[in-house]
Image (tube, rainbow, N blue to C red; front, side):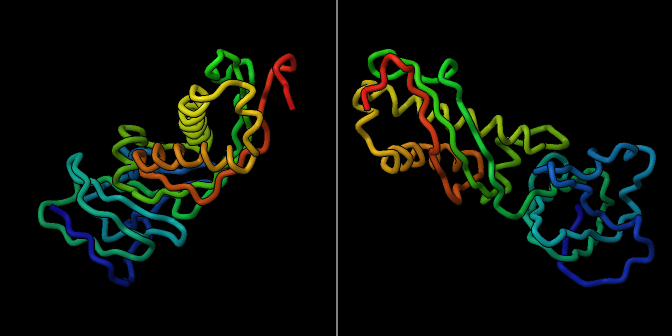
Length: 216
């Protein structure tokens, strides 16, 4: 088993330091598997330590079991039986904004079976890295902002479906935009929590109503 200890140190060779190679479009990056030549270039038994960059979080996995969660810093790896089964998941540590849109023709049904869409933005953060790894990342070696957007669309559509089924198309249009936004966000927050995410701000900027059903 490996022990990860927060400790400043001077590595003898920069190649012996585990660190992420995430770009701005990557939400999660798994060391060493996301590295193109990891099987040829990486010998984890020679690894001295790891760096979790500022604005990153990390989850330590050994033999497919999550054993630790780390904030930014420099860590020494003290080995007992090598690091053969070691993986590090580097995660975006700051909140990020996702613009979303559900076309009316692909939207959800109201109580009186009228299909509606919506658009807006959602600022989210990874609040529970272990839960995120278990429920979203799973066996993937990278997770992109595009994939996160697809997750967000799914979450918001589920929240809208739950809400819209309670109201007729006329009733929905009588609810103020601010109140409707808060109602959707309430359900979104619950769904995000199950995925290790939290809402830092939700906005509903547009509502797609078929022309023949616009009352207001």
